[in-house]
Image (cartoon, rainbow, N blue to C red; front, side, top):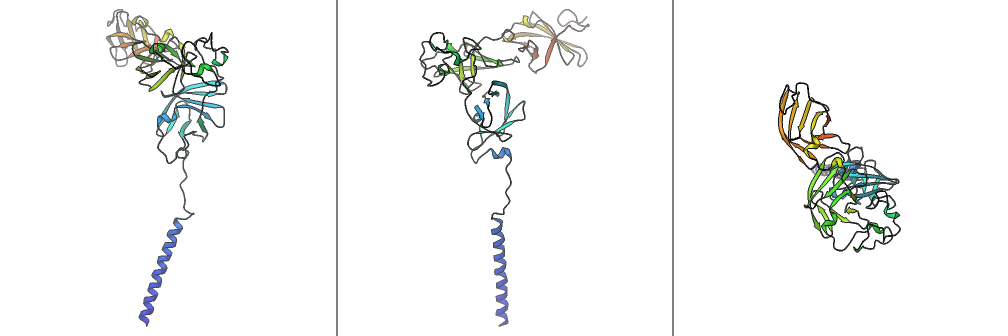
Length: 353
């Protein structure tokens, strides 16, 4: 009898322990479980796929204010307020975020495809107000909205067929029908004058920036658009005489400023000194130069040079060019100033007194 009693007691204790363990496990899965909060960057993402860089491109309007962020596919952006263009700059993409270079602000994409900034403010895909001034072929200060008669006097309307844009400005319509590549030839400028796009008749294009730097590439016709390979961007002609890309970048006919135009060696002849280092470059009209350096003793190294587009290419790999302010710069971003050679320097290339 005692043996059965001890067995029953042991079974009872074992059963009680099992039930207690199950209760603790159930409590761990209940409503009292702690959940790690998401960061602001994580909160912008849903369970969907990570955003691609193209997902940021386009025009975004703030929900809570009259501000627009215009993100282009070439690493630049424009910031608009209710008064029009406020400023422009460059950006970079890091992971799932787009950062504005000169600001602390950055952006992610939420689960609904909207943009969310680092302060939690939401932006939605939008368009720029059509009442702002947009330079066109006739007068850089004239807007499309000011053209009362879309027939005679409107440089954007000719014999080409124009799609009906509905209510709004006829100049915003894309020209349909057969478009030839020759209609894209020439120089096109953006609204704030920070860059110019030059379309040549040699299947090449050049993007000339105000700081004197340039991008180069080739193009091809795709249906009625001009596709730029490096930028992965297609421009079409508009009825107002401008061209516009799928990212909303609009350019108007213009001319390249003389200071950014193609140069010859004669445009660089003379003595130039680096602003921050004891190095001089003496350029001669014969396509020769002397590199005069005092950084590690006195050294004079002669070489040859030639002009290519707006640049002077030195034999040692240094490229010189002028920015929009007329300042001479090299391809490393260093500035040079007009100077006189050191006293020990002779009058002939590669010679010392």
